[in-house]
Length: 265
Image 1 (cartoon, rainbow, N blue to C red):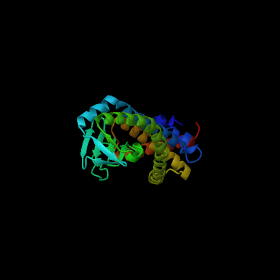
Image 2 (image 1 turned 90 degrees about the vertical axis):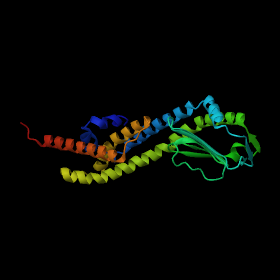
Image 3 (image 1 turned 135 degrees about the vertical axis):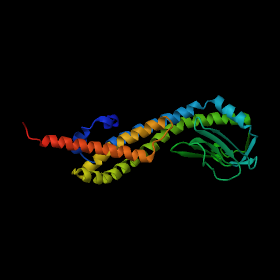
Image 4 (image 1 turned 90 degrees about the horizontal axis):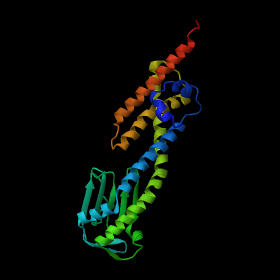
């Protein structure tokens, strides 16, 4: 099934072998697509986490020049209303600390980062937000966090994220992506009625879903490739790509049918 990730780009005979002669609704390639895209996302997030070395954490703490933090019963009580942020647009990463007691405000920030409020440490990735209450991290103990402890805690926290975030993200992302691709296939299966009416092609519902599955594969593979390089494919372009591939498959089906119906010489 992984072969459909690249065959859908160029193999027009898939209309005959998959759409017309296939069985069921044909959603299995979408599940393998979800597995592949999830793996790509996990690799990129893992690369980001492993790029944050203890030296990077230490340099970040020095650059932020933060005061000592007093934590009592899982809440930062000093300094009060302290806020500072660090944003690295090149690596699409941010670090914010805000002891005002206000909810985290991530509008305008990169998609990946760490946000410390007065009572929790929250990590953000492209698809997952994980909140760690300070009362759990400190086990309810009262303590003062200086630069040295912050450097050590930051390095340990990054190490914890390296172990927890990738597998957790993979388990979470696969079903979400599969559901998204499934709904997209159903939507474009419905839209196929417009194209089959104009091309005078007759398909049963299962064939329409298999046609939609093949047609969305190139667009979502291109989306995954764009994600690797930090880009994205506009929605309108996705629609155009899917429509073009659906038309190409239908045209190939008409040619094949015409060839089969031609009288033998």
